[in-house]
Length: 283
Figure 1 (cartoon, helix red, strand yellow):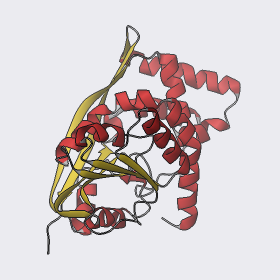
Figure 2 (figure 1 turned 180 degrees about the horizontal axis):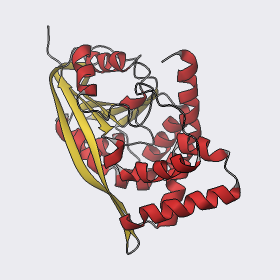
Figure 3 (figure 1 turned 90 degrees about the horizontal axis):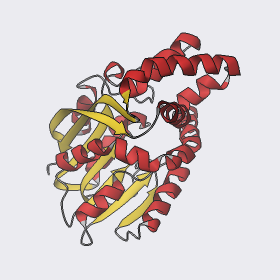
């Protein structure tokens, strides 16, 4: 990713930070199965030192804090100032003392070799400026025999939480041509793609696990529309030029397409993620 592209990506996330804070509790609940999957794959337990790369509005750091307990610790990192502030404020509200915060990018981690027992990344590897360097850095800062574990989205077509809105918007607003290697939520949706990056970066025993789960929450269709169109930088951009009448038409089409995922005031979307893990062995 060139520096200009990188700046654009970070600026977009800085704008998104306030929406991620607005929906922080919802996001934590909706994506909790991803956190559980990472904890399991990275073998995280009491007393460990864990690095969270690209921790966003606070997860999985906040959950891992409770798992490692007072004898363990979590270092949360994110390149976006707004995200760091959000996560730090929530940790303070919860009076958590075993989480520490650092604003930095994945490809330049300011930690000594072998500082952590495990490193995890939930839904952030897709946005790494240089994925191989990011994984290499994660491996560098964990101890020998430690694990790195990355959760990324599976294919768009099996993730209607995203595709339902995106497909409708595509019908009304021209979509920019997609570069499969550009930073994007589905950059590593193709099975094996991220696993190959882990292997290239030097990870051993690389395992890719498909995680099928439900994105569930007690919210209405109206709230879903608001959540998706506020949280997504690409949707915000694409809808910015629509007239009020066009927006109403798009919204109605989304409501019609998404209705089947809403029953009795509850949202339930099938979802699929990939959890790709590897191990570091001494040379």
